[in-house]
Image 1 (cartoon, one colour):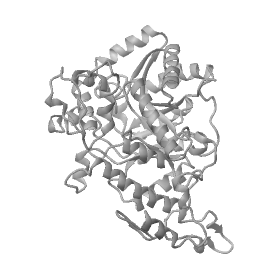
Image 2 (cartoon, rainbow, N blue to C red):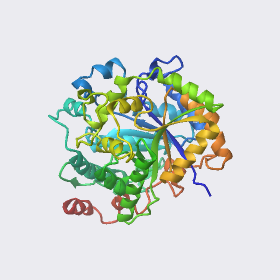
Image 3 (cartoon, rainbow, N blue to C red):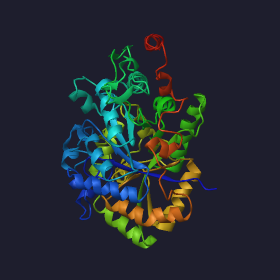
Image 4 (cartoon, rainbow, N blue to C red):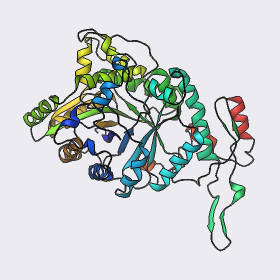
Length: 468
């Protein structure tokens, strides 16, 4: 039996996202990103196509590594200007019933206490369709604008993230007992105060003595996404993530990342298939292969060489302007996205990437591959990717907003459904239930479940922190 294929839309509250330069195309709508209708229209398209959700990326900084300046990012609208990702979700939730929302926010720039409230609020307003993409941030500019002299080292960011998640689990899972909220109008008691507990967290990086100030949301903890593919990121994912987002240019590179993630799950004593793994990919589809190829050729006329290198330099932390277009790419350890450069170096043992090739590659669809063809061709390729790499689905990056997703829903989704490898109806319930089918809360073997309140636990949180 063929493996089921899942789709997320990969978006960002900005212009063009993964395809710098394509905002100039007459059919592209991404310059409308400031209008709610832009987002509600998109949500309706995705729900019509039975997408699992919309995965909203974010950065709190600017791509200023290329040429040591923000000039190309600003001139070409390379993920700047960029608006807050959480603000658009309630509007999209209001016009949909099933679509999930994976929102990116960084543990590096916001204290866990107010963040816990923001996500609980989102989970309430979406009726349990909230997800959180856990990132540690990679842009030096973001760190400096928040008072840090330099970016915290790559692995140390994950050390902080470990404790950040501990605080959140205590707030979301342990502060309020399940039956604490009574809503008893006759007695005038909304909450049984004896069933709400301070978490008493006093750790190396955070001190949070009090209670969570939100009542439990439908999922308590949102569905947890994680996008780090470095060795440290994979270890963090195996302990916390429910869904993992990876990105690499070839099947070989993706397969290696998937194998590493599943092996880390085994080391943690977990089912290697307990996590859903999505890889980034773009699709150009039309009625025939010839029409799709012509469409892609037209798109290439709008692609930005400098925009591609602006993205690649920001992701990798390496200023590619210092090299000639024909120079070959080698791995350099940085404090940015370590797996990005490594994915090119290891993508294909028979291929060495040049700077020019990376520029052209990232200028349309970012770091992921592009499948071009008819619905039949695209469906064949998607099934090959799933079978050859063992991924569970795709984070689809658009090339034109919202034309790319309209085309996928019109051509690709029906073909996959006809083959029996794509859902025809949504599962009822919260986002976690739609993805895993086992109830709205974290499973008992998840790290976060260990922080659920148990009787006589007032001192237990302190003991956990002291022995961590």
